[in-house]
Image 1 (spheres, rainbow, N blue to C red):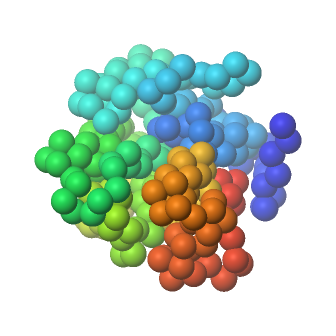
Image 2: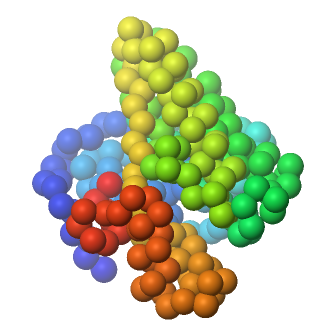
Length: 237
């Protein structure tokens, strides 16, 4: 399948850079892995599931970075193979909580949301920042969500709260390490129709007894509308 990007791609823009994109086998993560690879970077990624047939990544770690042990798996492999990173993209995130608002969220649901959407980034940053600071060069990107300020409370309240915490952490970390040569930035995508988001559309359609298109429109309305009239695509982030 040919991927079309809405911006120029240079074959040497990231030449020689060591890049980790967490959760890079689907959706936005997969699009970022492709983009960095096309631009000359050495790219590593992670996922809980094995690579699909036909997928190829220079360095792949199959693990769950929603756990401290899973994060350590990634850290150990990167340090062993590359000795550090130049660019860290903390992309892993999401929610599989059931519908039902605050009443449906157990302590386990809340802890899982924090582990995946906040603590995975904190743990990886803590491991790779010292090398970046020593070199006085490096970039950390945190992929947040528009839900940090426009939460969809029915099924993703814990997710939205964790992303809000990630935003605050991002600002503080940027202030701390910016003067030491490391750039820390955050991207808060709106409604991007990844496979996970499409699953949420189908879940809403089924639970509400409406069509898929109506469910998609309902989500767009809940986040205040989208000027182009459709969700974004992963390659557009």
